Amino acid sequence: MADARPRRPARPREEVFATARTAIAEHGLAKLTMAGLGKQLQMSAGHLLYYFGSKDQLLLETLRWSEDQLGARRHTALTDGGRDVWDRLGEYTRLYLPEGPGDPRWILWVEVWGRSPASEELRQGQLEIEAPWDADLVALLDEGTATGHFSAGTAAERAAQIRALLDGLAVPVALGLPGAHRPRALQLAGSAFRSLLATV
Image (cartoon, one colour):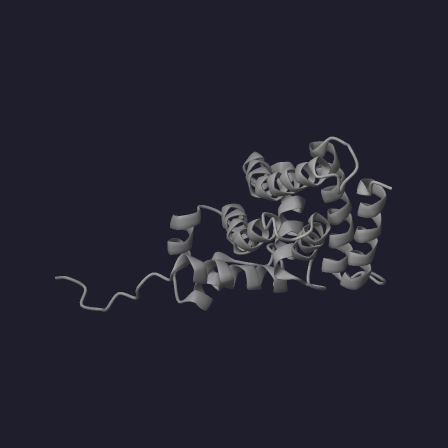
């Protein structure tokens, strides 16, 4: 005899990712269980595992979704030829850095970095997620150099320097370490960029 119980429709992936991002940011991946997440979403742990396979894969896909939320804004801001390249670099920085302690997007990054040494899948996924950030920055640096707004230099190398600096400023802010605040991070980044890129 067929099961007459109504089936609960599967949650949209966006809802799964949003709930997972919040749960990971609040409690960390180690304390997150598929059963607990499933309970919040009114889904079974088995259903979540069917779609994601593991907590690491859920983490990676949640990070990918989280970064996609900013992707269109970042690309639009950086390719707006009507704005000064320095202004666009500032916008890139504002989008890159965490909003403050416990920023869910950045807590996902911290979790991925902490687990990636033991997982080729996470390392490869991390590189794929970072690639658009890098490509947009390299394009902006190339434009700024070509138009004389930035000093001469190799865009790829300077993009690596800029992103390393931003990562170094971002993690203490995201973790809420003493003395680490978004306004201060923005100020330090701007000063460093002027030293690296200014023509005079």
